[in-house]
Image (cartoon, rainbow, N blue to C red):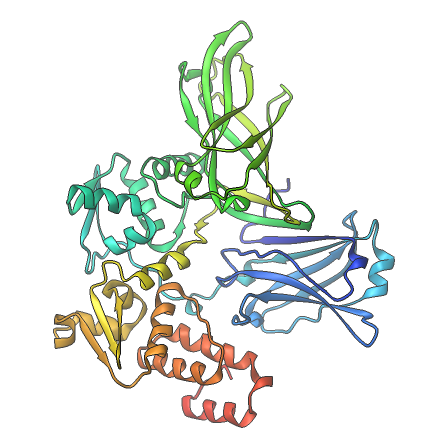
Length: 518
């Protein structure tokens, strides 16, 4: 596998039997840390009187994102990866991805078309287009303390409820406001940062493994998974390939019955459950030290997994000893031994055993997508669940400490989240005004459903607008509470729907709000 280029992500779509798609076809969804946070997909659509041409579209689920700010290179390839067509899409320009269908068909081999999107570092998100991350160090309005040797973090039970519920269960069961965790201080800080921001920077594989083991030990529901650097999908049986190298340092010094865990990886086809490998040093033999490799599913993931049986094929290899392939059907909570090796001990103090691991997962359901994900364990991690977790927190009202009253409706919220996302709310709660003291805010000039949209956005950074009046009213609310990112999204949405609305209405909107996006 080629070494990934820093800050570069590749999405490859392999379309088999291309000639059979006479109208439109869509790829599976994908996301990447440097592409605006949403679910993306690629659509091919035939056009022309005889559908002689094909357009390639980069789409997001609700068509809310401003795609003019995304840079990529698109290549159309045959199955031997010979370039048929390529185009560069620079920032601020519209892509011209028009392909002649007959030319494509003549150029293909075995009726297979490959579309390869490469997003480069120029695609990085402008921080001004994102909400500020939730702060995890200032302790503002905190109600729980997490400790480790040499470290203390004042945190919020609401965030723990959303992102680390097992810890909240322990706090509630023991009726304590603080807890001491048996992990290193830097590991605790990394996990707390991950819980609050969904991101984590690694200094190498070893630290990644330490954090992953701690996350499993304390039952973090979304163990820290490595960042993907490329995704490939095609149309056929739903299979996910997991490929990585697993270095075991100082192997010869490991004692009998030592157990080592690999990094955690996610299997999307099993309700996004988490899996890992286990190395067990079993015994010394005439052929060297024997060890076993097993596949295991994270305990909580078993409870949340789909009812379908999971079929796993494994291929494990190390050094010059060849490889072992095996297969198994997971039905319940179990550990499956997939390989067994022996290796002579080394006197080298830097002795490293490197395992090359390839695992293929599929379910009983008849899904036609294959997804292959390549991971980079040295790059920063970004959690894909953060937005949904925070949205669920808002909808639940769990541990809320402020009521937002708009007309007949009351919305429960959390001061520390509102403060981190809106300078107006921050000033309001930090001052000694009556509203702040009574944990209640009256809003009389904004409709309740617009307040609901705005609050949901402050938590999840997601916006679901379906009419121009709501877009304008939400823009006004964002302006009042100084939420620049929400203003931009409302403007982008209205701009994307110019063909649906009266131009004069848009002109009036621009005049009223001096909006430079439109």
